[in-house]
Image (tube, rainbow, N blue to C red; front, side, top):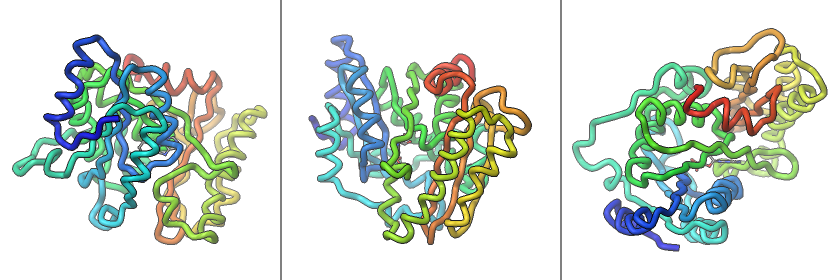
Length: 296
Ligand code: AMP
């Protein structure tokens, strides 16, 4: 696995691969990697000839009161995980490499960035769309892998790639969970044992709603109620919403299309997000076909 820190070095490594017609996969991350990231890298390694993983804690997607300065880091462990999962290139740019002095051009996502996390993290998806567009231009991958864990991000990124005619397929990989249901997240490291126990109520509710959906329950209000019931375990619920999985608009009534049940909640000062997609047709078809660039 090659470790590179500059755009010039990355391009020099990738140029011969591209000339040989190799398929390049890309997994953008913020580091402090876990098996959720591992699943993305493994899927890229299985489907592509070369896999680039980037670790970049992107300042433009953090609000002023968020955890940018304290975002967890462990480069040695990250390198081992990347190697183990089959990455071929690890890209570790400094902030000045991505945002040189004088930088002033941003990608402004549209309506898809407004609800859910967008409502509580103003500018977040502008920062995400900008850095992902830049990274797509730097890496020029054939396929890029994103986790369903950040559901709204997958929808915003896919829309951005389509709107800007970026020649990349955005692949969404299902959320990886601990055995007890907690979605893996770099931010779980902030939770002590007691907080972690309370954080479980997030996945508990979502998975109960998913089980009910699979058992035939289609009523949006009932599904929301199942997800809400255990949430008294957390300190505050920022949002719990059932939305159309394609346009992220609130969904009411009987579920007749793919919807996403999305939660953001605080346990102590740690903000956690999670979701389940409830789809009358198979989940992979929903994540990777009906939301494909052609149809969103
Ligand atoms: P992050 O490092 O948090 O920016 O995440 C990098 C990528 O890993 C994003 O596409 C995330 O959605 C994805 N990811 C994070 N946690 C998980 C998880 N538990 N399962 C699957 N993908 C994940």
